[in-house]
Length: 148
Image (cartoon, rainbow, N blue to C red; front, side):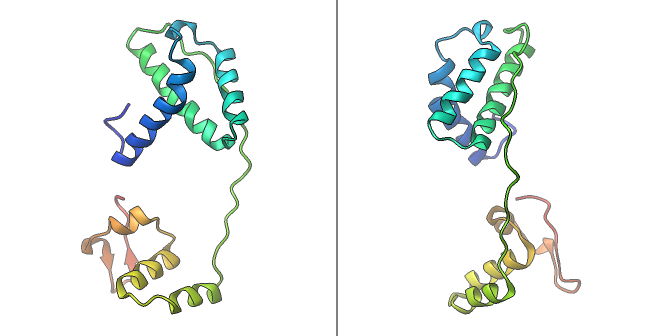
């Protein structure tokens, strides 16, 4: 599961495994895990205050583990699991005035450029930090995102 992930993704998945999945399912044999157990896991995470999207992320990791076990011949079939319904994400954007106010209080030139780039493009921090000069075409005012 881990070789195809970024280091931060590996750490996140490892944390979910050790803090959530192993404590709940760790004493069960793979063949003992049923859809009912998965429903109980979901309910227990919601009771702990986890957001539905976080629970779904945990289910994604559990599903990958179970599919690997099935592929390796350790499990006959993966139990069905239903994801929780998640309300649509709400997005809030800075107005032109808010953007200008933010930029006006930045003294450090490097931070000014990064904040301006984020405001104008919507790039994530990892995407901005992953840019190289070959990704920037000043003439066409174009930034290409090939990697983050």
